[in-house]
Image (cartoon, rainbow, N blue to C red; front, side, top):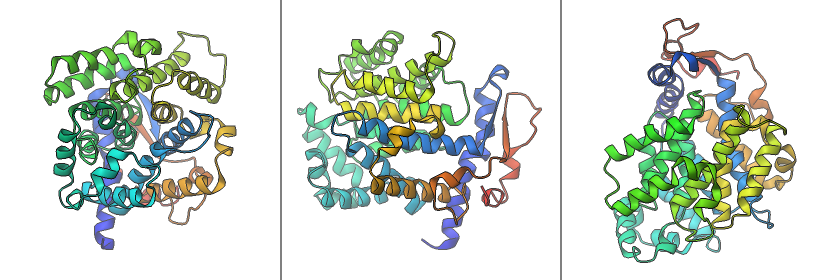
Amino acid sequence: MSESNKDTLQNDLQNDLQNDLQNECDRKLSFDDSKYITLKNIKNKIIGLVYGCVLGDINSTNKFKTSYSTDQIILMLNTFIETGVFNISTFAQLLKVHSEKNKDSTPLYIKELVESDEYISDTSKRCNDLNDKKRTDESEKYENIPLIRATIVGMFKKWDNYSVAQCMCTHFDHKCITASILISSCVRSMFLGRVTNLGEIIPDTLQLIFSLNRMKKESDIKSFMKHTSKEYCKDIKLAKLKKDKKNIYKCMNSALWSLHKLITLYSGQEKLKLAPSENFKDIINELSKEKGDVQSNCALSGALMGCELGYDNLPTDWIDSIEPDIKKNIDNKIINFLKVLSMVDSNITDIEDVFINPGEDIITVSSGKDHEKDPGKDHEKDPGKDHETN
């Protein structure tokens, strides 16, 4: 990629998070939801999302090792680092190389998917054909990895398109697509500074999903509605995670339950007794006892909770327990990702230095016209320049 094209992509991405941010908030927020969004908060959520996923993954079992879920987050970051956008061809090539290097940890379905040359030349067709072939093997087909990837794309303006596109790389299926859209929508809401209210997010997203006409079977619609219902979001035992553990709606439900439980602790409905980091740990530990696809469930739940809480509210003892080489690799990926977004200086090499300048531009979010600052105008000319020192 030429430097000029790279600069253009960086500006486009920055505009997704900055220029578009104000318009989205004006359209979706009421005056009562008005709040300040800073670039520091956005970076805190990005890093919190990634590390929340990693911590949920590592601490979901007594093996204390990363799984394929963490690999998917890294692959997504690499895709954006390499191309500046979510590109199906780029992701497919990265996935193929990763699968060849990590054969022991790669699911059988993914191995079969990427071994064909057609996977690179026509990714969605190869994926669709294999999905049809595997339709009778539900345990093999309904891997939950698209939901993990869906968290990353939620921060972008094209979150809905990206959410569908990433599904097309491995699981071109209506269940995966609808569940991924919902997860991305939750993340998008957090990045826009909205009060995270699943009672509003889920109905709004359902309208989008049904407008796409993705679900054809009545049984699938009922299952989706059941696993997004208020009752299922409040009581994880209703989902029976141990049964049919590869049903993607169960993984989706586990994340919604975790997020609901976390939000409830801060909404006044329950007395807050523990620090946010301890609540994160308790929820992951409780979820892991429900069995099922434990690592996917906890990784996805960790990503959503990490995005909601931010990196600075994640358990430091869990972060410190990550193997140094693994942590260094994750830190480097995050920093390079933030550089693509022009959110950190090019000289930054330590994850802690990402926050060295707290006095960043404040983005006012409200439905009125009295904005202290209009981020759209400020970043339209040179969105990267204003944040070179951040």
